[in-house]
Image (cartoon, rainbow, N blue to C red; front, side, top):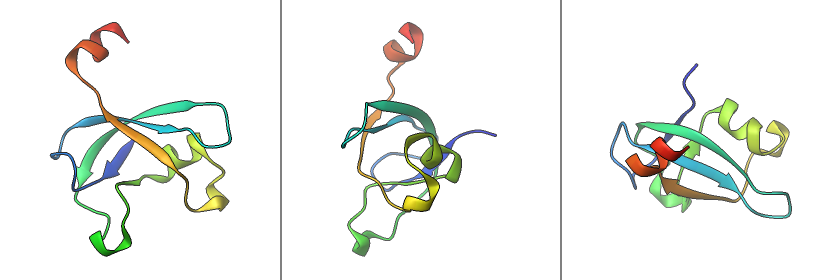
Amino acid sequence: QTPYAASYEWPLGTWVWVCRDVGLPPKCVEAVILDSGPKKSLGRLIDVSPDVFQALYPLSQGLGRVRVMEITEVQAVKG
């Protein structure tokens, strides 16, 4: 299944890196923005699918601090 996320910050179809960077070794997961969200009043930048979240944090944690960066064509080619 395609790793996906929701955000108002990037257009639908944009691929992003979602990276954990707090208290653990850095790890990044690719995800595609497939929906708008999260609710703006929550003050969150992005909602991710359970598969994306679980690759970064224990699913039982529920929330985690991440950095998000758009994947450019150059990054995609270089890997």
